[in-house]
View 1 (tube, rainbow, N blue to C red):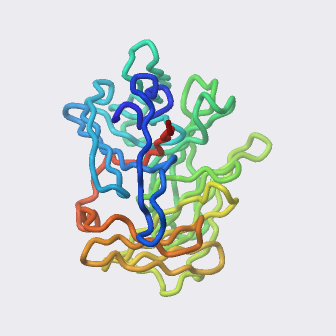
View 2 (tube, rainbow, N blue to C red):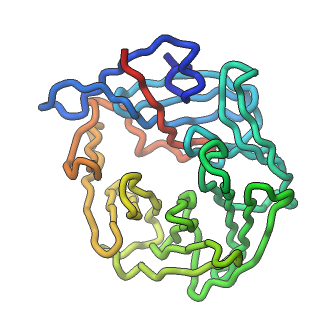
Length: 299
């Protein structure tokens, strides 16, 4: 079961399965064909834990390629992984003959990037870009990028026209630009125009109501089927607010009985996950934890 749920290449080692997921108590049971799992990595032994919030259970598997590593980003079944100054892209597989690893040029500095992401998987795009950014001061950032075919990283320093502090959210590749959300809700954008890199700040903090304060945590997400970005604000009380461009959509609080209420952007409706889910809201945030989309195939 675990092997089949990780990626397309792993499905050959296990027979097809249908996983029943009830996301609405009043609706008929449905089979989830495209479920998101939370992947956590133990650096010491390479043990990967996959948590399914809809079913409230964990799956485990070991991957020796990830011992001592840090997962920086996940997209399209690929992981961006760092180990010291080394970086590589990994598409996991239980079979050594099918495992795919792309070793990237070594970083010049250990402190190269605070947060990183990449535009697309190497198998789905002929022009992928890996992007990383580090904060030097409130008015200056160091940007590092690697385009397919480059034999070394390009590192540049850019000034920000307004004070800008990075949040912990990974950059989002939106259109043909990498977007980074700041701690006050502003969004920094990095891209190329006629081959020349640029960095600009979109001042959006006035769009937020209530106003964002220092203790809030911000994340930037993209709805896959629409050309829209959302900023997600989590307060210390675990209230969750989601803002789409110029207007806000207010999400409910995760309640104390762990019945995880959430708002579906696709269905435009509030929903409830499985009763008595493990409460993740009070857990300490750890590195090496990413969301990964797992495809399920019915019989």
